[in-house]
Length: 262
Image (cartoon, rainbow, N blue to C red; front, side, top):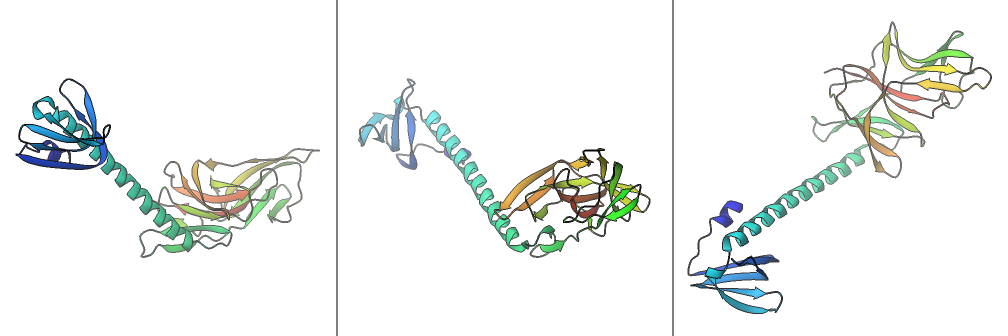
């Protein structure tokens, strides 16, 4: 666009029409605010915005190069803005299409970008257990395990999750079951288990201190019914992870585990 505008010659009769008002610069540094102009021989006619009428001036007094350069810059800026708006519109349409594919049942989901239509993948919820000196107890959200003074850990069976992803920055869709804290955590693999949380229970007060290896994520709320999209701020390192939903201090974590393999 800029090249075409700057390459314009001055034929005997040239008419340029512009949708917006612009400045017609003069060689003395002044300008007229105009809607359009046309060149006829040695004269230039322009429609004055100030006086709402056509006026005439010698072409020799007009700085056409500056006028055309500014118009080219504005046209380029408008084209870039239109491109950005078009990309935003496409992104919104894609997001609305994605939302329609995600179930409203609480859980974690992904959409396979490489498949036709974006195949829905449902993460199975992991069974977590609290490991204390007294043994291991299944952690149930609605009926927390008895708290015993000292240290404990929240663990998942097995050294590897059944769900495997290959993207280092996956888009994960989380439909919450309650307004609780949620995100991605890194699991520590040990023989036969993966540790999700390290727990300390304070004597007398029974206060629960939870420690997790949380991954920094971006969060975007997609619907008012607590559907979110989350994705890591930085690429994940190969290993074991889980999407977690919990209330701090209540030992009520729900987890959906996955392995990341490049």
